[in-house]
Image (cartoon, rainbow, N blue to C red; front, side):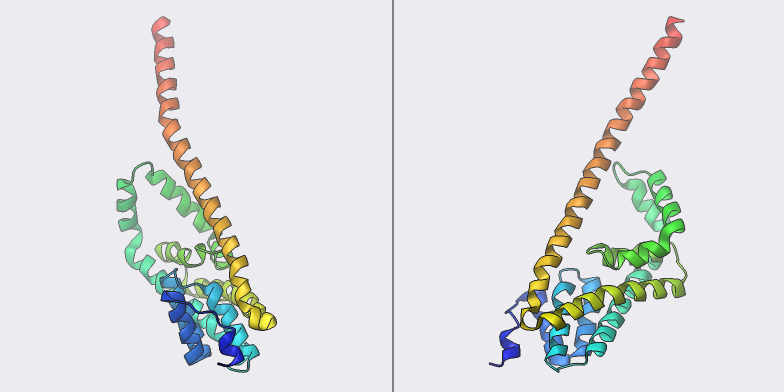
Length: 226
């Protein structure tokens, strides 16, 4: 067994599949794995990107090529999700939202208004946040963001994220897999933040009807006493 093989921890399932792609196909395999990561989030980019950097450090692929291929894969995966959002369309989305408990069409209207103002920043920075890296492409498609604009900001955000992780793997060498632990902590922080935000939203939405009923009752009683 070579030193390079010893430095790659055994992995099963989707992570093992992605690792095998990088090992067998080099840069194109890394790009394909990253593209699939957009569509199947259980494939961890936090494994693929540092592994590509480590492979470059071992001379199995070019460092610049590793960054280019993984960025192309990110853009390809994001573009697929963009077209999924575009195919779903606003009318279908509004019909779905109208059937959801606790969610109102006014919430969707405010979200759309926010995205209209901040969509380019959302796409750019969203490409550097776990979970949102994939999801941000869907509302961009739903709102029919100009394709050229979407591609530019997706490419820039993806290039920054990918470069950081590829270079980390390149510099760490045989210890490239330690990057995953730090990335996992960041992802968990994002998940906890989103969960707390969801809880706050539900609590406020459940309390609002009570306040509304109390206000209406109070006004009616005041008029009756007069």
